Length: 164
Image (cartoon, rainbow, N blue to C red):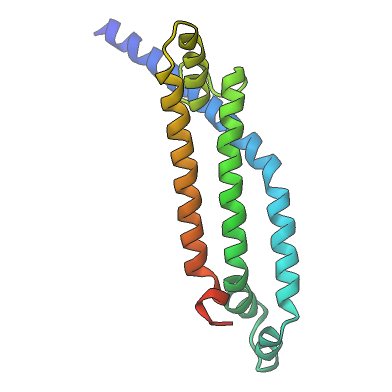
């Protein structure tokens, strides 16, 4: 029972260390990636703030919160969604590159970057399919995510729905 308890402590320590590495990578990417999205959404908000439908809502007495959430946000949300999806794809690529270089998540974690690093070692021995599999799965995931985001943007964009 004592030996099992010690193994569980080691497992808890490994999970804690690896989750800290993942959290660190996620925080670094999030802290460096939000400014472009903020600037674009702020510019879109300022552009929509002076449009006729927002001025009309102001004229009939709509509150600032109502104008912001009922009139402006639906017309800006598709821009935010597209930018967030582009950032998710670039964050995935950044994590892969950092992990491949050994600066991201640890070797004991499952990551496309660590898989690429291990596949590179196997490529020397002639096992090319590991590299091809990792690359194919990354390409399929990124493409599927981009298609999903495009469909979501089409569903949320008021101009495409004819509501503006």
